[in-house]
Length: 433
Ligand SMILES: Cc1ncc(COP(=O)(O)O)c(C=O)c1O
Image (tube, rainbow, N blue to C red; front, side):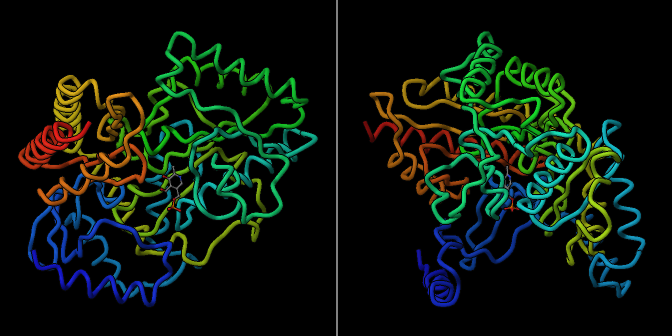
């Protein structure tokens, strides 16, 4: 295939753009509609990434385009400052959409700002309301919450924090209950042991911990916690006046088959952080909580120039209204069932080499070699083969491939994508040991 247009574009980016943004799969997007992408050679791909989980209701959804057009026609292209109907209408419907546990929302632009905000709110609550001695936060190893400093300090990747210099002594970690180590039966005991370990090291939860943050599922492997673990965590937090925050950046807005991923655990968090799928491709994120918590920052203590601007609010509102339609829920349920059923068949056929994790419309295939060790090179071969055959998946850089098609993907594209996946797995795994 002639990929000179792609190479030329990449050359320009290499020259002028920070390297940290590079390393994506070599597709030079020309347009994207629904669940398909067309590149500059007019080659089509089925998108099992939803543009990294943002286009949950499909690329260039006409409801979103109309909502953006409405803002363009209104000549209201500015910031959050001063009232406008887009912001007023959106914030009310967003809070209603999030459910009766919640009363208020704060809007920002990126996911990392949302988790930074949650950090601030948990600490303000701990110090001002719960009268804690220290503003401690408990997080989980291997979980991800964003790349800015506070968010990254709460992320569980100790080796990547060398640049921070001063490590926050009030952020603590406990282990993630990986499903191959911790079953439903031992989820509660596993959690209790983690707590005991920290107590043995001198941590006094009642006085020193304000909040616990959880990524609803661990990203790279679409790994969910045992329900018993989260329920034990929830009981422990309530007993010690500790807030629970779920980072729903990927999990929210029906990605896991439920409106929010935390619903799988049957607990009620105090705070949720949302983003990605909430606005179908525009820069919007948020924190949703109670009045008591969200009104802790005084005027001027929490705002951001481009947050809640009319354009993103209009796109956010159109997303919610689309998701509230019965026809959307019907197609979501059908897609979730078919997606998981077909992935189970693939897992069964290659059970010696792959494991499939996930719920709803998020899934990860973890690839091992015959000795049961993580097999990154075969995973990468698989990603390349899928791309050559017209299926775009998320390359994690690890031994996993992530799959997250648009939630409203048409059955024929879902089926075709899964067929490509099945064939590639067959070809590549049969050729590697
Ligand atoms: C769970 C989670 N939290 C936070 C973030 C950060 O969001 P953003 O990239 O919009 O800052 C991400 C992004 O991938 C995420 O998956």
